[in-house]
Amino acid sequence: MHKMNLRKVDLNLLVILEVLLEERHVTRAAERLDMSQPAVSRALQRLRETFADPLLVKSIHGYDLSARAEELLPALKSVLQDLGQLVGRPVFDPASSTAQVRVACLDLEGALFLPRLLEAMRRDALQMQLDIHSQPGDHFMLLQQGDVDFVISGLVPPQGEAQINRIPLATTCVVCVMRHDHPLATAPLTLDAYISASHGYVSMTGRGVSVMDQLLRGYGLQRQVVVRTNSFLTVPEFCARTDLLFALPQIVAERLTRDGQLIMKALPSELAERELRFYLYWHQRHHRDPMHRWVRRQLVADPEEAFDLTDNNQSKRDKESD
Image (cartoon, rainbow, N blue to C red; front, side, top):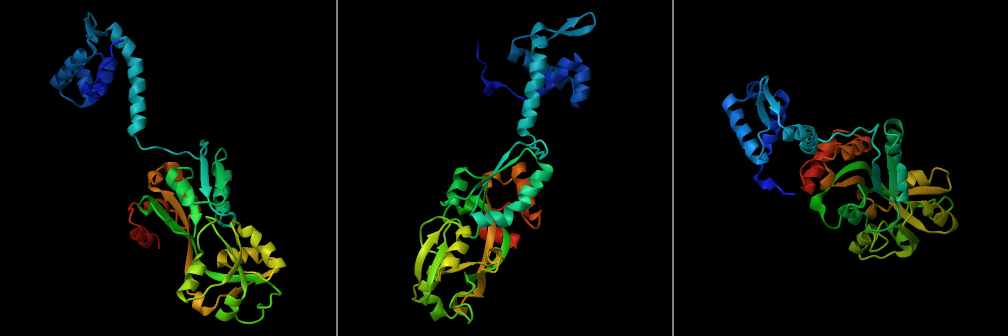
């Protein structure tokens, strides 16, 4: 079969061809297309050259379709419909969507922020699926590679920042968590007492130095870290059976101390200045995707902010999302 060189085909002619074949009349086609009759006649001549066929054939009733045109018309309608969908604005209907929403976050981060999304899915998008990646690792790399759609984290991407959008989900501070009868439970927590204690911390990546240890190094200090875990949900068990301290976001600590077995205490003033934000992160490749926009709208407090951010500059995005 002879292959046509598509680079030589003016696709605008296909729109004119559809109307010509439907109307079977140059003047009526020109009126529908809001074009002059000579312009449509010239287009018909080019189409005849392109398809090597007369397409419209004179008859006693005006014009009839050639056998080739009869064959072309249904295929032409299908092609133009596909092209319209290709270049048109994509539409997302949660009620009929079977999309999978893939989110990377630690366990308690998911427990804090994802129920709102799941509630919306069970109400408006019954066929959609929520897939939560809570295993330790570089969640931002998963986002860069397209293995997840979103990351929920209080951390900052180590690389590829220009391609990642973010918006705050919550702002909190860092507090110290210990068992309710810990030796340090009844007095204000001083820096010396904090350094003298044994510690655990929760790590999203499972490697590297924690933010608290970096902060202590700025004072020339070092604490004794006994355990590093990738799960917030292990903290209550570790604290209840030992004298370990954990420095945790207050929004997380409030969830872990609800049964009264653990308590929260303010960190020493030297360590308590840092504000912590949890962010929803997504890659620029999906910024305008309608399904992603719908998900962001369910997760953030101000739905308009979920998809109004268009600039890749991180500092400007943070300013716009404050």
